[in-house]
Image (tube, rainbow, N blue to C red):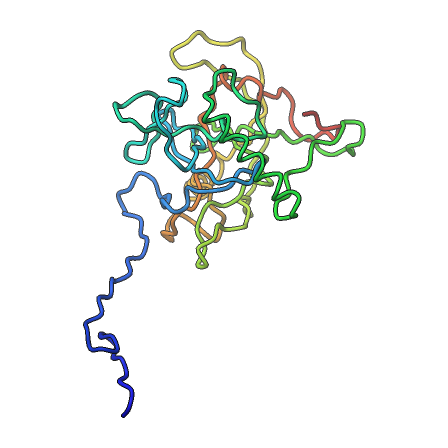
Length: 284
């Protein structure tokens, strides 16, 4: 006797083998967003638990808990639903909803009105975070050091205002830490910075009027101006890509660009009336 070897399309007993063809993740050319659905997940830097990022109706991202919960357990102001990849707050008639990760994150204070089931879920996440801290598998970000212990350094805004294509945006973090959102060949996020060989210019410009509202008192604000750069370079900045992953290459995004349309009323705390070229203590 001799063993029967399995062929490529059949099992050892001769039965057909059903092979499901692999479908690679691709982004349609007419898609309004180049973000892959697999790239919206992440982990909280404070508790290490999973979360998912979604765009809202106001173009601002929100971190939602990965699992759905019954509507009866969630306050009305914290019930989120998804439609075509966009998160909306409110009720849609279903018995399940999504909740913000902030409600369950043990790093943030618990809301005053929270059901017993969600309080139990917060305790479970806190226990898991403590176990990961004790095992050394999770390290939270270090706390901010006192102002007196920080060395003198050029004062850079924590969230600078950047002018791209004659539109002002509020950056999610300092320009030196602004990371590319493109996907590499190893299906990871690109580790390179958005800063390129053509730098912008820090200028003092008036805040300007607010859309649909009364004009604010004229005051100067520091803006990182990119209007003098070529159109392709400004487009690369707006898509938050590094020079190696320009928009024309077609690489998908694994993270959401963190730009926000600058509003002098909503973002008045990020208005700085002097250029960031003086060395002084950084304030928090």
